[in-house]
Length: 207
Ligand code: TZP
Ligand code: MG
Image (cartoon, rainbow, N blue to C red; front, side, top):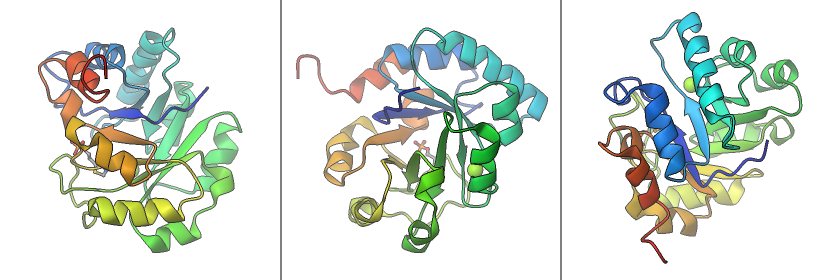
């Protein structure tokens, strides 16, 4: 499946609660989201597999890939399009071997040391951040700012998506830093109109 990192939505169960997970994601995809990552630290594997299957069915006609955060077994059981791993979430080579060559595999990178020791042949993209401090992730690393982001992107052998406190107003600065896209939780999930919130990342109509 083609990977377009332009607008990468990460789900948050609390922020999607009112509207429902599937409805929130479908609306956001109508608004222009190009990748969806299912992220829920509290759900059991069984619950997450069920959510992933429902999301996969809802996205089936859109060409938008569904990735699973952290949990290889869930990605496999739900036939998701891929997996996103943090630095402590398991071995990239093992995940690639289990998922196969066609799956999308991403890795979070926060530092130059992490960038220097990753294996680009096993990965499709990197998530770089946080750009800004954010309440959406507990214990996140020191924020990079756009200069720090640009310095990491410059060393990356793979396409990069920036993350952490990003809003529609940050699209231009993120592109100037060299990232291929923005990954967001609250700027889309935490809004009353996820479709409209996603659309804002494409800029004003007619631009
Ligand atoms: N990883 C680094 S920051 C972050 C994750 C999962 C949370 C991003 O959420 P938000 O609401 O877009 O700042
Ligand atoms: Mg993780």
